[in-house]
Length: 118
Image: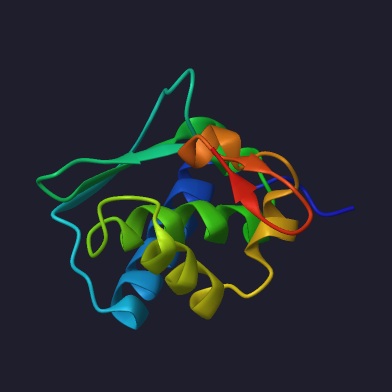
């Protein structure tokens, strides 16, 4: 078994993933920070600041990508309407499966096998 990476290394990798996805999506977050968050995996401010929960560092990379893409898309679309869901599906076609019921902590939706309901 591989030794676990230190939190600082995992944080750098997570921020690198944010940069990679931001480039792919065509957005530029003003700032990306990792902090203690008790009720959410992440948030995006109207000014363009992305905050990621420290707890996300312990999650698998696929789920991390769901959270990252979700927040970065809010720099383009500010709600969770049809356009937002279409973009999530375009960038991460199986994102609902990857979220595995944890998506309600990302955006307030409850996961169902075929659709999202608020």
